[in-house]
Image (cartoon, rainbow, N blue to C red; front, side, top):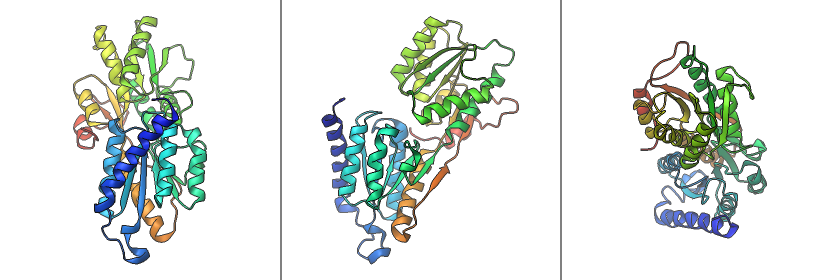
Length: 337
């Protein structure tokens, strides 16, 4: 799946399927001049079609597009990191005449020139969740404050680990990806330590993947069997860590903190698998993005800058001095199934 042809073809198929689906039902409200929203087409490109986070984002965009009477085209890479697939999707959306493109960049730096080309053709580009590099390659960014999300779980972990000699494993994303860097740095800041602190006994990259998270945790336990705190970049990595800890008989003695806030993650928190989870809101990102493109199409006013779509700390047990919500709140506001 690593070749440009294969990943690009998958993105084309995803886009084509959506075009077909919208062909008969996407014309609601059209034919009434510049004010009719039926003539507005919005593109959404996510990192993958399988990650529940991006599945939820797609559902949010679809719901908002249906409400606003606009046509939505969707596509995704074949895997997280498939820049070639996303480039192909952008090119196809340009050809389809979209007014705006919403995108979660798989490779923030590599996608930037293609985003610039789209903008040069008068298309508004909005990054969701992950900023491109440079960030001004997109007109606007709607995303979680990832530094704040990391700080919240770091602060919580600090209180939970008070009085203990802490041995930390950090299960990170991929080197250089802004989301992962900000969450990692936020966790350290919230915990009150700097990179290189001796309490960090293992650092490993997971790509945000459960299987890789489990392998990373297994390797960390071999390196430092006395780990008692795990920071995980997201819930899949956290669940992988939990599975490795459970297999090693350490799931009751190690605290796991993570970021996502899905319904599956909140359920895991309720069952004691995670101690805390910073909840983010992909539905809001997508709906705001669709609305911003519609407004641009109608008024010519482009969105700009960064819009914080919010984050809440969901904790199984409250920690003194750290603002958090309980699992019931988390379940009421979670995403996915």
